[in-house]
Length: 307
Image (cartoon, rainbow, N blue to C red; front, side, top):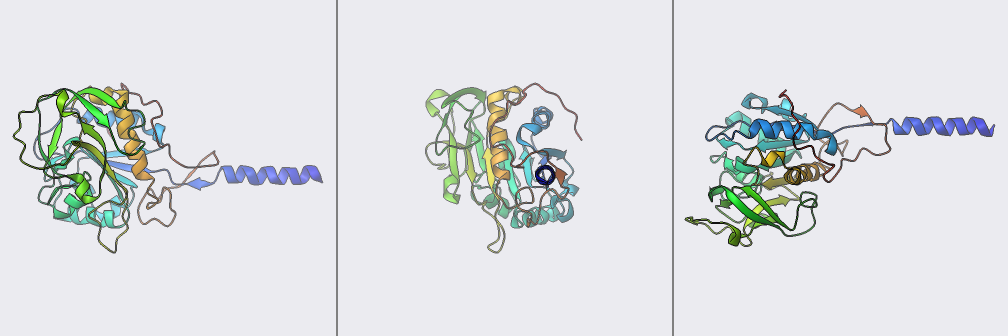
């Protein structure tokens, strides 16, 4: 009899281990309407190659038609990757606003803070800068210093996007300047530029606050309607070069930011009542379906084909 009950307990344990869960699904949007970075294909390949390290499925597109209510509802997060210019039409902007109002999470990388300048909500949605383009960043791009080696400092509270980053990180990238201080919209800055480590001939026309912001996050993404469900937002201004996307430190920064944003508990990945997110459950042979919050040895030189 004891053996029989032991068998039942073991059976229930196996069923529990195989419980269904919703793995986070993220849409990478890399369309451009102005300057185009040649690092975009490398960036997409790197994100997909390292998707398993944060338990995420990445899809990618440059089709603005994919920004509709039905399609966006399938995603726990949207990544704007090095976009420039007006990369969405009016219907796409409306669908994106609806997605953010329904708890969708937003991640923006590099020049995405120079996109959708004629879109007011986007400025707030990302933690952007004054008016129009505030993307997930909370601030809108103004200009950058010439490409050169610079030192980036880790500041602010501990965050998954900076746990693998040296306190004083030397890298070759563009040091962005912004039209406003992202902290004015509630952003928490976690990377800053050491302005003594590089040359910037300006002109500096706006007050972006101090220390010089380069990456930040927002626990409750700005730009969501008062009656909406605010997800998380994360922005990093780094990511200009192909070589940057092949660097394990940078990848730990980006993957950590994406993973953190997805744990907002506002989408189906972590909330079965979520209005948006991956609708296709999986069986997970573990006791927990929680995504990793850090860098699980990202693979900097892996290659991938676009879907």
